[in-house]
Image (tube, one colour):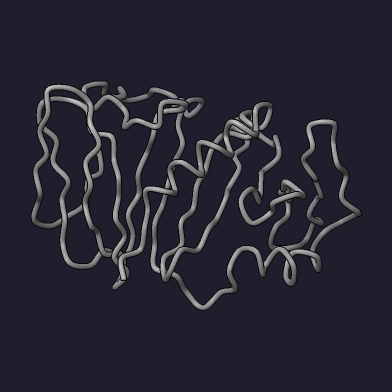
Length: 200
């Protein structure tokens, strides 16, 4: 369930269903198509949101069960969670332009294309991207371009995918382990982003 401050628009159904809500992210209207579970669900709305954070269960891409509450001291389990942030776009270059213009300055070596078809390059130590790898699908980097952390501690490595739609920046985060089935992950991200449409 999406929860943000403001007045609310209610949706109700006897089973999970798709609920459409128009939400503005700093002046950019984004239509969110959300799967809502339960008898009653509330999507809180207001005219402008500087940022919206959402969590989806993988691979169903449904909201987490709100009745399951973590206990104090529990170690967060993100192995089946996909995190999405929608925020107002800033003055930085779009992700694909960063891939072409900015990232090459900080990469350590030539890309290696694995048997899975993904291209991987390491960012150099001492740069802003230290400890990360640049991973992408060479045939369509605009759709599957990632920065992924490496295993350095108890924190599970995560991958970050960014997309600019209209004036909004969409950031998707998921565990790096999912790259073992990266084509399914890519398809899931595309389905999810397809529900985030800027309104003209």
